[in-house]
Amino acid sequence: MSVYVDHLLPCLPNKNWHWNHSAHLFADTVAELHTFAARLGLKRIWFQDEGFLPHYDLTTNKHGKAVTLGAVLLTREKATMPTITQNQADAANRVVQQRGVIPHWSRAWAMPTLATFDCRPIKSFVLKYLMHSILSVDPFARNQALATLRNDMDPSTTAEHHMPAVDFLDMLVKQGVTADLVLFDPPYSPRQIKECYNGIGIRATQGHTQGVRCKRERELVARMQNIGGIVLSFGWNSTGMGKGLGYELIEGLLVNHGGAHNDTICTAERKVSARMVRDKRSS
Ligand SMILES: C[S@@+](CC[C@H](N)C(=O)[O-])C[C@H]1O[C@@H](n2cnc3c(N)ncnc32)[C@H](O)[C@@H]1O
Image (cartoon, rainbow, N blue to C red; front, side, top):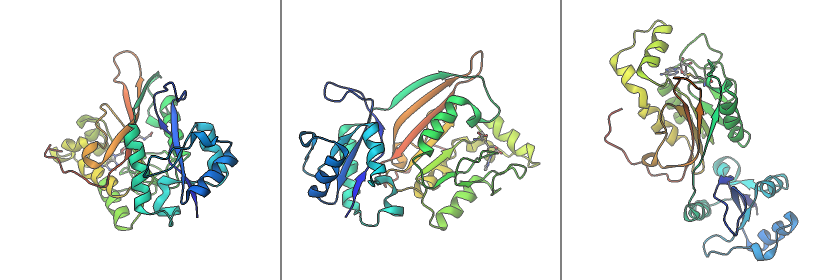
């Protein structure tokens, strides 16, 4: 018997909810849910029985306290929640979808940095999600040691693996790895791809430079995640994983670097569907 919470998600405050984040508390049985809610200091009148998933809404503070008191994070369903059924996960997901996640966009200013994640607002964005993560993957890590499993094609970097990202991700999928968080920070343009390949002594072909959308890499990432998994993408557009791979946008951050520099566009997307729709756009 367990009590669960899902991830905190951005939302718009309204007359009934004055905060800009919320999450859900639910349990295997309603009795267990009420007992746990009382320990958290939640009033019984806040209980919501919407037919398919009785739950309480949680503020950021109560979410942290619930986890401290032993509530299990929903997005870890495969790794840490053998008792949760797919029906319960689907039901919880329907609550989130029905509530409608309103992506929260913000904008910050920062000097450009050589390494993406050394830029202060971007680092905070990454750490906010990383602190809830159990197993994270970074296929384009360069020298960043943030994720659990790290790869970079360039052998002079400190990542543990040095393969093309597509091979690294394919290897993890074949090993049955489930990542609750993926950091996706590839080269941002055909020119940057060319520089990366030339930098390690490989002549960049048209095939390489046309791969700027990283379509195959993103499909493998989607296969490596359960419902609730998060992907943080960085680049000069906000395309990210997209609905076609079963993801919804939950947060966006524009980092303006001043002058004629391009903004760095950071997105956080959450997997909400296991169904992938193949699109016909070229990669
Ligand atoms: C934008 S940088 C990543 C920066 C990193 N997130 C940081 O904060 O330092 C992209 C990295 O991807 C690597 N890379 C480029 N193409 C790759 C590929 N096909 N497979 C794996 N790594 C690749 C490059 O060597 C480069 O270090």
